Image 1: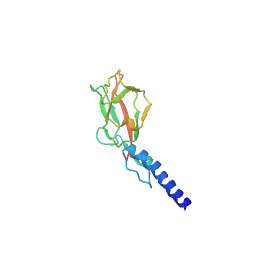
Image 2: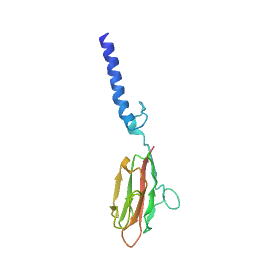
Image 3: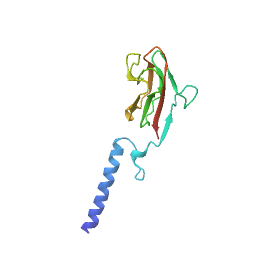
Image 4: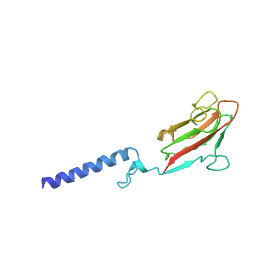
Amino acid sequence: MWRRRRKSFLGLLCAIFLAVPAAIAGEPFNFMVGVANRCQTTGINLQGTGGAGNAITIDNTSGGVSIMLANQARCGGTISNTGAGAMNCAPTTETVSSTIGQTIAAGQAYNFGPEGQQAWKCIRTTSTSTTANVAEALP
């Protein structure tokens, strides 16, 4: 009888350790899939000029060029500078200018996790426009 109770207790304890972290994160827990696999698709340049998938031109638009909308489901992503000049990027809650923001040099990228769920904008830091490509991890 003790072994049966101990197995039941251990099973309950395992279920609690699996479900509580998901509950704290505010997400339902699927015992078959788990929280780690909730983002299974990728969105590319969803804010691209001329439609999704196109590279985004980063110019000197006052306040920056919108490259990502806010998305609370976004798990992470990458902002890549595929042009010849550097650019500064920041969440729209911050000021972005040619001298303020996360500088991404030509050929470089900025990777982020779920902390990047807010909307983002970028602006060029040189006299010529550059291009950006954005990949977002989505559910």
